[in-house]
Structure formats: C-alpha cells, structure tokens
Figure 1 (cartoon, rainbow, N blue to C red):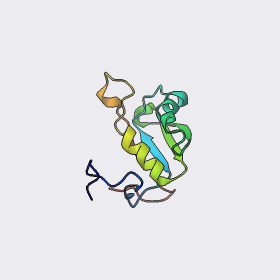
Figure 2 (cartoon, rainbow, N blue to C red):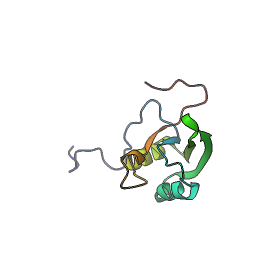
Figure 3 (cartoon, rainbow, N blue to C red):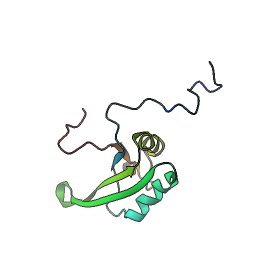
Figure 4 (cartoon, one colour):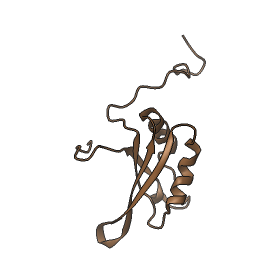
Amino acid sequence: HNYGYGGPPPFEAPPLPHDASPTLYVEGLPADATEREVAHIFRRFEGQGYQSIRMFPKEGKNGSQLFLCFVEFDHPHAANHAMQTTQGYRFDRKSEASALKISFSRPKGAPRAA
C-alpha cells in the first residue's frame, strides 16, 4: 500500500529505538535557562503525553553552571515524537552552541550508548 507520503498509515506508530523510555534527557541548555523557558518548548505536547519537567543545577567543568534536565512523558512513543520534533532546537537563534541535544534518559547505572 502506498499511503501517499511514503510512511505507514497515521494510526501506526513508528518502531521505537531499543533504548526508548518515557523520559527525555535534554543537554545544551544555556546557563541562564529557566524551567519556565524549557517548559515552554515542550508545552506544545500537552494532550500528547507531556507530563512534567525536572531541572537540577549542576556545576560543570571550569565552574560553569549547567543543568540536568529531564522531560517526562506518559509513554515512550510520546517521548520519541517530542524528541524528533525538538531535536536541535535553538534557544538563541544567533548562537550555534545553543542547539539542544535530546536523548532518552537511561535508568540509573545503565551504560551510556556509544
């Protein structure tokens, strides 16, 4: 069957990666990012499984301020959709360095994929 756009019919979700989880880990946030600003990016997924955001301050290399940021969804499919849609989002349009890098959060103690 050709559905006109080369993909599966809309009621079939794409297969999930083996490391899929309902929680996304967000890297690349500017040091002055607020939880409200980050929530604004993901708020578009309300009604599509978006649950909440958790941000924890962390001191980076050379004493800079960083955040550990996790975005919770109710299902890995919802998290995967949000990750595909927001990957590379730029906080500051002028800065190449501000692109978000989003991945599935791993359970504590799980090895990082290479």
